[in-house]
Length: 300
Image (cartoon, rainbow, N blue to C red; front, side, top):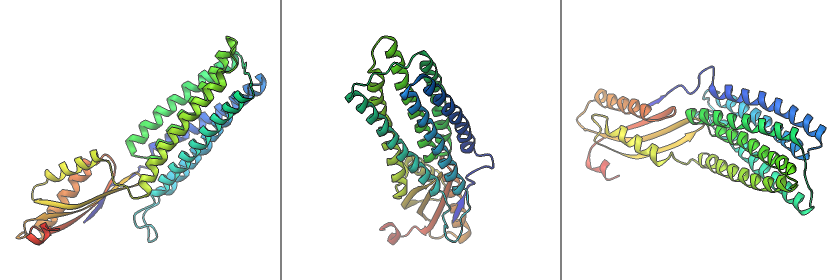
């Protein structure tokens, strides 16, 4: 038996939070570039370019989620959820590249003994950017957890990476006020390494899903508890799970009393499906194989 719950509503929260991110990134891109050129702050100009890369990854996530909404067809019988996962991989790769760029620029600036004295205007813009992007991170990661989206989780970290790069700019501004011109470069190196680490963690999650990795041990325990609560199930085996985008796929073999009629066994299978749907924190596709509880089946 197979039953699937609806994955998305017409007004998807992932779309909404990503659209909000695009709007903020456009505004921050413009403000950072204008103030950066007016003050001669190379750090703020680079930070503005980072906001532009955020906007690009927002568009990649939107595209991935749009493709993932397509219904299953002959070519993709399990749906198109992997497109959203691939979008998460693109964002993770972008995080690693951006982080490496930020750290490298800081190293080069230190090597060349470049001093930065950006001034108070840059400090104000950087502080506002940190507040906005940290808020976008928290908002996006909350939605990502609620819908189970690797792409949104990766995009949330891209928002935070922008906030972290703004911290480097802020450090440079504060350092200039006390006469220390290397604060920007040192902060850039630290922030860049943090962004690379975040990208690596996100990429690991994406690759786990793309390589048919199962769900977490906590989720397996919830599934097993749900199975134990279904009346009529004597035992189960060959429990397998995997994630496809926002959906969890579960298949298993359930042993029932051999004297049951087909109708009675079918009802137990339906009860198992309902119980597993309730136990899963994300939409689930459940396939239950009913088998008679006889000795040869228990040996499997």
